[in-house]
Image (tube, rainbow, N blue to C red):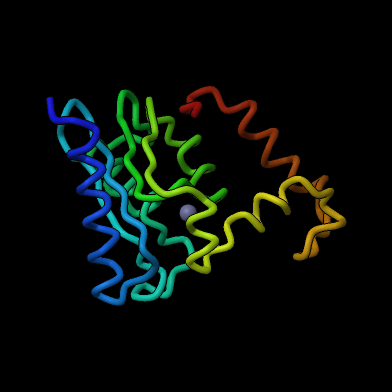
Length: 157
Ligand SMILES: [Zn+2]
């Protein structure tokens, strides 16, 4: 079995490739299952014009596609930087066994990536956040919720 350091070096190499290729910010990630890299990626926000194309999301999508499953059971995700709130959410949905990170969110902030701002927003009530959120159509939407609750052949996740 190769070491954490080996896989982290892969993630960091991806981060550098992403910067050098002009794909996006300096972030890389790999997903490893039983010693095998099953997903990898670097930030591709610029090249894909996709604000969700963070390294972790790209790597999780590839890993889940390769597994043919929506969970990363028993996997380790290596990321060159502490995940932003969006990626942290994706990580919790994908449920890997472990996350190993290198740079901190403070390091990202110093490079101009203010993940910390989103963390601060999460602590505010909805009405105080910088992007307004308004509630509408709950009664109709609850019908879809009810359909899920009553669906007998569903796959819970
Ligand atoms: Zn992210």
